[in-house]
Length: 227
Image 1 (cartoon, rainbow, N blue to C red):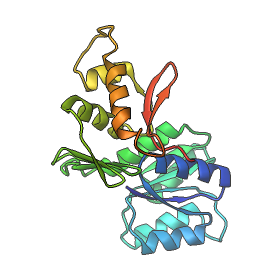
Image 2: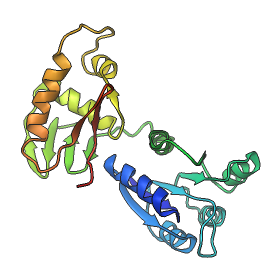
Image 3: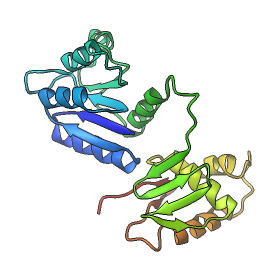
């Protein structure tokens, strides 16, 4: 997805932009309301994440009210420290589709943004998954990284597909057993470790930066870490 982030707090902006890019999304950032409105009005995005209070003479409410008046219905999520009920109501009435308050958990932000873009699009099948330079074509059942073809066994393909569909999120052993092996119990074997190891040999080893990471005492996560 192509996402616009309008946020003037440098630390918050860097955190959100970095996380969204690691999850495989293309992100544009504006640090003031005027630039945010210009980008939102002149370019196409799949979703917008914006703060309420912004420099530049244009706040988040005005940005969204202006876009909606222009018949721009890009899904928008407010991310703001303004947490009172009245604040949230104003954000939704201005045309916001969702409202999150700071501080926040990035995993929830990512889930909410992706949920917004799914609304009204359930009849459009997903045929391609992309995380960083890793591409998976679900129709041809092919995988490429940096343009280089990667040959996978059927189970390896299912495992990678599951990880890519949950990119940027911790995937637990239980999730993998149920989602990839259709087990609803733990067989107490190292089948997951073996397949992840094989997948790493093909997806990570030939390339400069790894994508598959072990999260200690939790599971695995597929994302690109900044060098």
